Image (cartoon, rainbow, N blue to C red):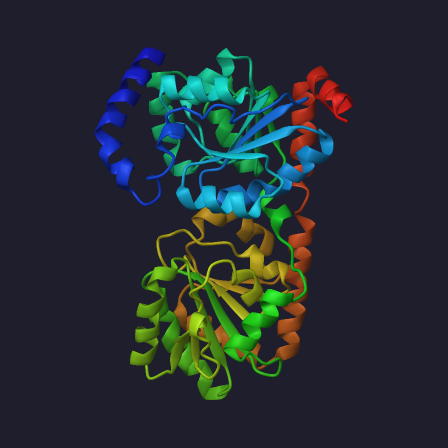
Length: 429
């Protein structure tokens, strides 16, 4: 029922508009979110126009390796990247130099999506994860645009909600030309939701292709210098922690120091605005603490309050715990420290990173049910440096083994585009 969904979209938008107008994640780019672009924004012609969409900064980074593969496969193509959030927009402009144009996803309204598709004029629209926007898909289909879902995932707990929604608005999955799913279970869920079997493929997750355990560069050396990190001093890093996790981790760290008095802890909160509160919490535990931005070379606990240095921090680590896993958040990226050759510990709640857990458990990744088990495992590993090295190499190898989804996806997209894809490749200078 397209008319029902269109009417409901406009009604919901009117109710939410005051909130969207001022929310920190969506308060910029209002005209483009409504499908209005400045004159001359899309200049010139190209053998192919490719529109990729990722909701947030992390989602866009997962698409970065695909941009490289698309540019290699279709030289001269124009790649437009869209995102929902302001932080994603800024990150894409700063760190995705391969992208030709960055914009905001239009609100899923018939008028806004139709204007956006007409302005961008893509040959193919590539959505990510579960970013199924019915009006956008319908507008793209009307203009003959091929539609692809990549890194496809559908939460098994939400299948009933998807079915109910699709029964009201029509099934948008049947308009998607190609569904490139992360794993077999995800493909089965797509089929259960009504996707056409001949359009479903399992190609893996492109975020694995974005993992690179590079050697410690200038930024890493600067971080090490500023916080006083030494090669002969063990460093325990708690990455991407969420509210409430530090209160569990700090007592573990205190106990570990009883046997390893030179051990230091770096906490990298998922949201840096919490940094000062974490410093105060560490001090309340009787530990010295400081902010990375202020150096803190002698502190027991350093709180990473900068953006973009987590990978460099992982390169310095002896042992890593990844947060979001002792809370209901559903985990965070456990493969990034693994790519740096570090053993990775994480808690029981990893629902959003199920595929990563499958890759890493038993191969350098250790899942622990609670802080007590975290203490025992960390204590055992710190007492056996050779075991840390062994697990780190296993973790690095595990990450290497799952790369390649981006190249597989682009092969499938080229097949979908058929003659048009071949013509685009031949027409490029």
